Length: 272
Image (cartoon, rainbow, N blue to C red; front, side, top):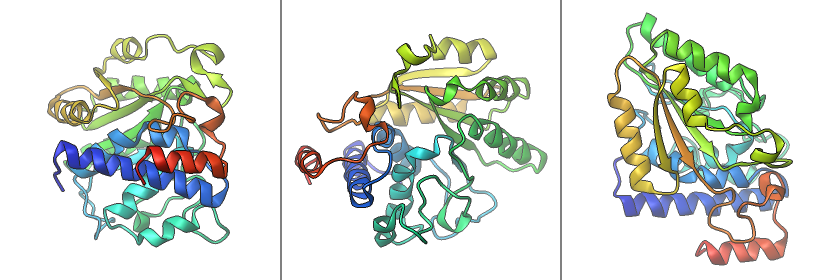
């Protein structure tokens, strides 16, 4: 599904539109982080992931674990857009009986590799998948989304140590660094310092990028895939609520749906 940079940028914008529409329709959900990660998620699924939307249980598929499950509106949108399930299902987001819950529930038929939401667990489980590939002589790669707020959990750093110890070079962390969590700026709530230096100290190959530069996202994924003997961490500096002026860098929109007026502004600014 290789696309041009312009096509990927257009898709990422469509993903942001869908995220805002889903959360507005449900009057519930988390927009901010999903919007900040839309570019990397688009680059991963459209230009890198070895994945067959028509056969989501394919044993040799690359895996993606959304560790920060609250950002699922973005993942659901991507999975629908590549054809894993009907896009009409997106409008049942967070509704009673819908498989598209407010946090992902394990369902390979829908492309969901793990039930997530409890911060800190995804990196460890993704490591287990990568170790399983080694034991079974499989060539698939395992990617996980990690975040700055989620990395305030100690389990993340235990998992970082393990991946380096076992030299899991089929393992890549996509780190969304927007410096905003539900209670404010991460640097005020619990400062992480240099995330890149932390991963380097644990023995990871680290790539730092502007997470809204689509070419940089694609180049980083290419570089990571070529690394041997080390897990890889792509640290993406991003903006919470990217693309909508009234959302950007405002912790309120970590988990607050837009009003009708804010929704109208978002649709205009996103060109919808």
